[in-house]
Structure formats: C-alpha cells, structure tokens
Image (cartoon, rainbow, N blue to C red; front, side):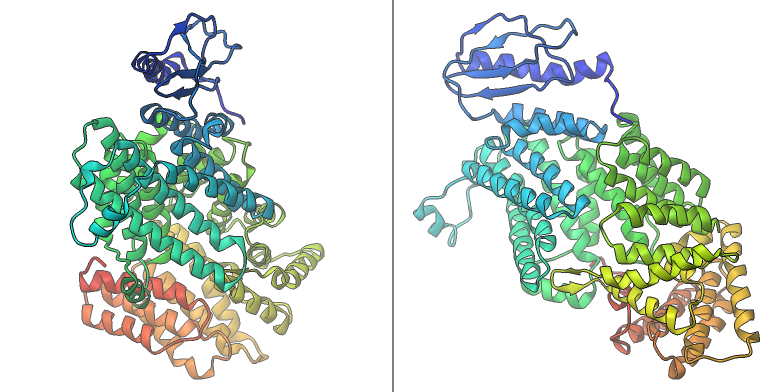
Length: 627
C-alpha cells in the first residue's frame, strides 16, 4: 500500500513556513526576482540555496494546485543553504518519513546532502536503514560513504579554533557565545553522524577490530553530545526556534546515552566509567521526556526512543514493566499525526501485546505490515511479533506461517529463524511426514548460517546450535522448544495479564511433566529435560501469582544441578526466578542474596549476558539506585 495524498490543510501547514522563509531570504540577500508561473505542491521538491549574493528555488512545473510563487534569482548561486530553511526542510522530510512517504523524504534530502548538514544527516539515516534492513554489503558500503560525506559537511560548518584558542581551552572556560547558530548545530549533527557511523562499524566486518573501532567512535560521539549540552546551557541564544531544535537533539542524544548505558551490567559500567562514559536512568528518561514535550525537530525521535524503551527494552532485557499508560498517551498523539505510519502502528501493536490483548495486537501488527510496501524489510518486525502472538494463542500453524516468512525473506539471522520455525512445528501433535522432514532439514541447516558480529558469535545463535544438535541426539525430539524460546525471549511476562493465556501454556507444561514421569526408557539428558520442564512451570506460576508452588518447582531445578549434563543455564535462570519471587513478596534481603549468587557463582553457561541484564535491572530496583 503506497502513500496517500495529503489534504489541502496539510499542504498549507508545510508550504507556508517554507514560502515565507524563501521570500525573507530573497529580500535579505538583496537578490532580484522575477515572476514565474511555476507552482509548488506537496509532492514537489522544495529546494533552496541562500547566500549573500542570491537564492535559488527549484520548483516542480507539474503541479496543478493553482498556487504560484516567485521564482527567485538564480544569478550568482551559492552552494550553501540557510540554517532556518534547512531545519524546515528537515522537518518536512521527517513528516514524509513517518507518513511512509520514504521516497519523497529521500528526494527532498538528497540534492543537498553534499552541502547542507541537516540534509546530509537525513540522507545518511536512509542509507544506514537500508544497510541494516538488507545486510547487503553494497548497501553497507553506500551507507559508509554517505556518512563520510556527512561528517565532511558537518566539519566544514563546525567552529575552527585558532592555535591560541585551542591552548586556552585547557586553562580557561570556553566562551560558547562565540559560536554562531550554524556552528552549534554543526556540533550536534556531527555527534549524530558519529553515532550512526559507530553503529554501522559493528556490521561492516566481522572482526574484533570493528568492535574496538565502534567503541572508540561511540566514545567520541558521547563527548560531542556532552559538548553540545555545554553549548545549550552556557550560550546566549538569539533565536528561540534555533535553540528549540538544538535542545530537542541534545535531549535525545544525552537521554538515549544515559538510558542505554544504565541498562548495562555493573561490571561493564565500571569499565565504561573508567574511559569516560556514564549512565543514569532517571536523567536519561527525564531528558527524553523533555525532548518529547518540545516541538523541536527531534520530538518524534524522542517519542520513538521512549516507546522503544518502555515497550521493548524493558520487556526483553529486564523483569520490569514499561510505563504503558505513558506509551498510550504518546501513541494517541502520534497516530493522530501519522495515522498510517508504519512505526507507530507497530508500537500500537506492541502496546496491546504487552497488555495481553492478543487479538488487538494482531490487528495492529497486520495494519503496520500492510501500511507500506516501499521497504518490505519493515514487514519482518511485524512477522516476528505475530509469530509470538500466535504462540501465546497456541495457534502453532498460524505461528509457523510467520516463521516461514522470516526464514524465506529476512537476512538478519537465518540460524534463529530456521530453528524458530522448527521449534514451532514441533509443538504440533499431528505432524505430517512432510512437516517432519521440514523440521529435520531446518535443524540441519540452522548451524550452517551461524554468523559473527564484531568478531564474536551471537549468544542466541550458539544456544540454538546446541539445541539443534540435541534434537538429533534425542532421536529427533525436543521438550517444548517453542515455549522454551518464549521464556528466553521474556514473553512469559504477557501470561500474567490474562488467566486464559497462562492456563493454556501451563496445561502443556503439566502434560509434558506427566509424560516425562511416566516414560519407561531413559536417556542421558533426562535431568536436563526435567529441569527445563520445572523451570518453565515455576516461571509460569510466578507470572500467575502462585509463589509457593513456583518456589517448589524452581527449588527442584536447583536440586537437579549435579546431574544436568548440558543445559547448565537452567540453574542460574531458576535462581533469578527465585530472587524475583522474593522481591515481589517484599523479602528484599533474600532477593538480593539470590540475585547476587546467580551473578557471582555461575559462569560459562548459555545466554549468560542476557541473564546478567535482568540481574542488573532487578538489583538496581532493589537497592534503590538510578544507575
């Protein structure tokens, strides 16, 4: 479904400020003008060049809107664009982007990507998105080149210190009033470009060198954002509009850094603090909320970051609940402005999913999926979510359909997608011969696609490779593989929202426990399988507020530790569940003790870093600190 035409009001809202600024730029530059019959529509590209000698406007001749504007003088053109006009065009590009008009946004930005820093940053974002969505080397190379150009453009506009000023900075406070608005915004755009380039570095090649390079670039970016905060707070701003757009960018950058760093395990934070990083969750959220309430250029990006944190990060990396009420408020406002925007439709689906409203979640995810076809890779986000929605509904065949889409269409991780499809199919009781052969092939193929990012294998892919081996070692069987994945991805949280969701999963767990107890033959992995069943049972009971029975199952997992052969991850995961039960009962000392034991006494098991994120989040809450 392609993008729709805008209303007359929408056209006017965005054309009016541009038209006014074009006129203002024309007279302030002293440029002569002549009347032209060219006209401008919302589909046309409004491009302007402002300088001391003249201004140029390229207007589309093909519009039939009946609106006429002056054609500005094209004599003695400059290659620079006025900052106010650049900000307004960047705002228009953002509006296009979040209304799924991706081509219009890109076409607006690209002609000026080599001279205007805001156009260059926007153009780089498009190239970066294409690179991470496709994972194709040619798109990664294009993104790297666009970011190189972007940094060159930003550096041309950044303040150049003399040798005397550079030496003086070491001994006296910088006078930020010497910065022009253009120079201030150049610092901010440079920081944003460095952050994108750092993230691209992690996928450019598969060596440890890329990890080190990326880390150094992120550190430089963080220092740039801190400098931008100094500019914001210590400079006298003559333009309220320029300050507002600048502040929204600084709040977004500093808020995101603070928030993301605060989520890292304590041992990682100590290393980062040693090299100059710091992260405070409260400060991070406060900055993002401030940026969201400012009508600046990055307001919508602050909204996206807050939604991502509350609806995804909280649920994947911790035991915490996101602020669903605040997310509802954000989405109501954003969907008014971007009713067909793929991102906000997706987040609306995620909100309903986290509330346990599975049918509503399914509706919004499908609406997001079908809202645009320009970038089909965006569909994969909805396919992923629809896979798990249908797992919770116990509709295994429908879930396997979305798993198939991911295997066939997405390039992010064929190992994960192949195993997930096999795991879902194994939950079906009456598998056909053809489906059984499909499972066998998927289990054989999954390890072959294992990839390395920044010189290291992905923990989830390593976990899956072990499970694929176990499948064949156990005579082509696994114990509730899809439910195990649901637990690992932290989807169990949704169970506690509605009894019927948890009950369906619990009945499957109980049935498998009974089958395990009644089986007549034994295998080397009996203790591993029993421990897995008991962990899933205990986790399910915790979500349904049955702490006594949950503790009984989880403590049984701990007792099986000496006889567990391969799935050693089950023991520390069970201990963390025990700690969380104590926390929910208000037994803080016992909770901290269990979580600290899980952190210090166990190592070298599958998905260890994932568990450490959860431990860190829980200990942070229990100890009442913000870091």
